[in-house]
Length: 122
Image 1 (cartoon, rainbow, N blue to C red):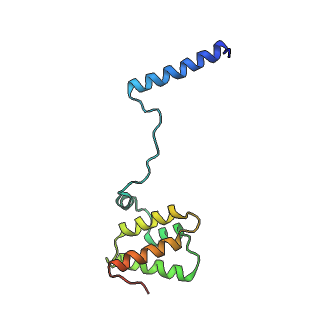
Image 2 (cartoon, rainbow, N blue to C red):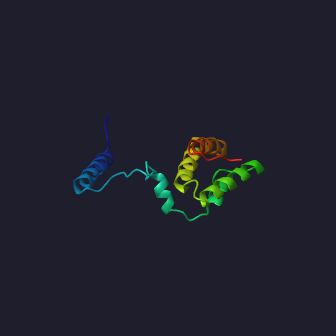
Image 3 (tube, helix red, strand yellow):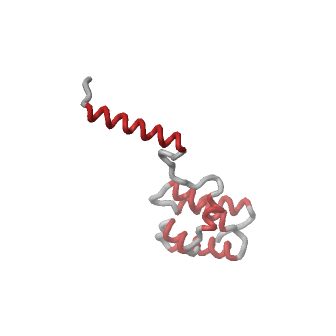
């Protein structure tokens, strides 16, 4: 396979640039900063939205029963029975699990975790 001089020059330039970047310590590709193990604590520092709005819009609440459950969760967080960090963890998990319809997953896991802590929802 015969390469033109221009193609050879471009290939050498790309290789040389990559080598120079690696020698200088410049990262060539930086992965996106996704939430790790401590994502609940990271989200606590990012709270710019009320919990009720976060849950309603993020979980795509569509029915009255779902709204009532969100209201109960918010009330229990405000009363100190549930931690905002735990709600955030379940919220993120549900959105990753099923981005189009996360609410059923959120409700199921919230009920399970709350039950283990002796907290009941109506």
